[in-house]
Image (cartoon, rainbow, N blue to C red; front, side, top):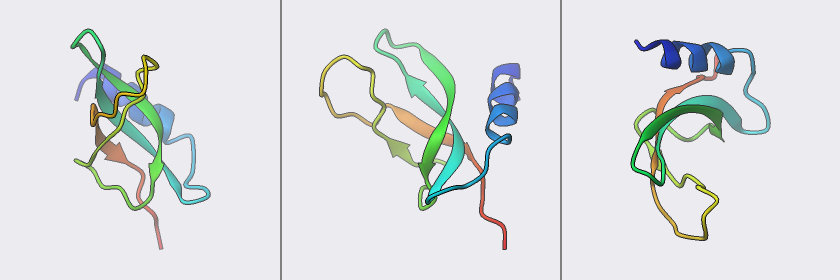
Length: 76
C-alpha cells in the first residue's frame, strides 16, 4: 500500500459515519490526466469500486472520474 493511500486512510479513520455519509478514500483523475488519492465523504450506500462524479471546478461537465478505494463500514 502506498504511503499516500495509508495517509489518506489514517485521515479518514479520524471521522465517523454521520447523517448517512461515510468517510472514504478515492482515486480521482484530474483535468491534466494525472491521478490523486483523496479523502472525502460518500453516501453509506456506496461500495468500494463504485465510481462517482468528481467536481474538478471547471464547469458543469458530468463525469465519473473518481473511484472509491476504501470506505468506513458501519458496525453493528
